[in-house]
Image 1 (cartoon, rainbow, N blue to C red):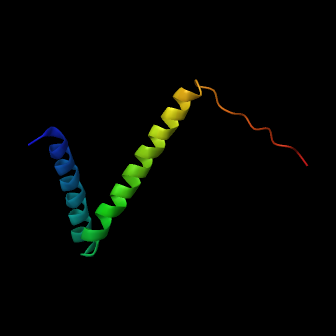
Image 2 (image 1 turned 90 degrees about the vertical axis):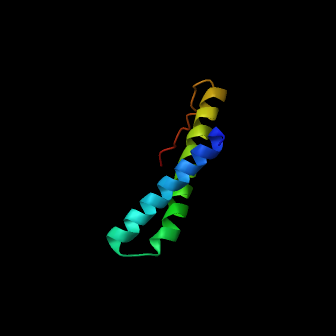
Image 3 (image 1 turned 180 degrees about the horizontal axis):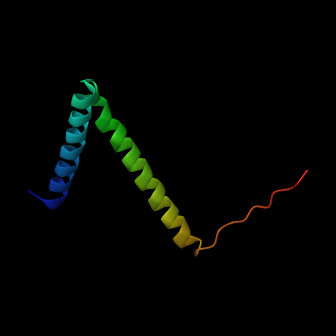
Length: 72
């Protein structure tokens, strides 16, 4: 089995295991279907945001834009 397929398989297995544990402990079988999607969404959104921030940091050379706020 190629390494990327093994990594995806382990990831999906962990998602299903976490969903199954949550569904059993809360006695809500619907969590088996909804939790993996929620966890994947959070995981990939966090990863995308991290990589985007890292990319912007590298492109900007470590400088942040400072926006001055006016006082009323």
